[in-house]
Image (tube, rainbow, N blue to C red; front, side):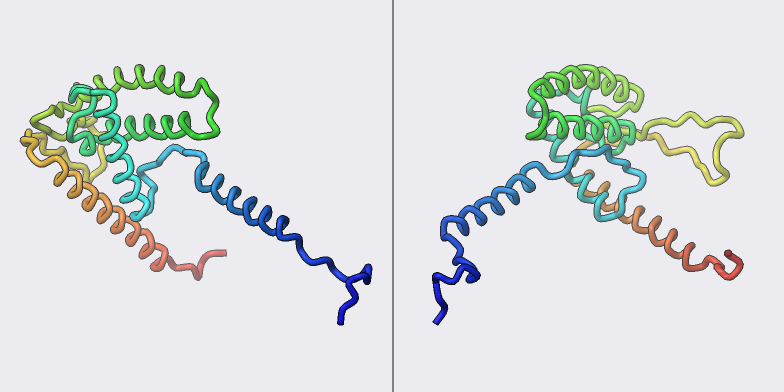
Length: 203
């Protein structure tokens, strides 16, 4: 039978120590879950297909919250903003800024800084909407001015006819599907190009 008075015998854990360790582990996990990662700018050109779909759905939900929360008119955020890259990039930057400023670790004045930048962004959004030509009840692709002798050989001018806005949510879901499929094709083409590369002449 072990001698409890033996100084070399390891002492049994104190139940209180075990509970403290469990609580500390759970607290650390909770902090990690709450804080997460620092929001970074989103590069819509390089996102893998799955990340692209996720981020598009996330920003759509946030923009919907934003327009309701601040009562924003279509002159600032029109229903078809997702069909206009200039609006997607601008709103994406605004959202990432919001996530950073309202992070649990943000300083107390960050919310004020966000609202200051939000006011400036609203003016830019008005400009983008005016240039793009998208409205509450109708939409057309943003016109791109071709440069004489400055476009790629396969470049073609877009059809800029107006279409009525009738089922915005359905159009957004179709847009997400289109973008994900296009990104999957880009990714497959890149992989195929690597596979077809002749590595025999490489050093």
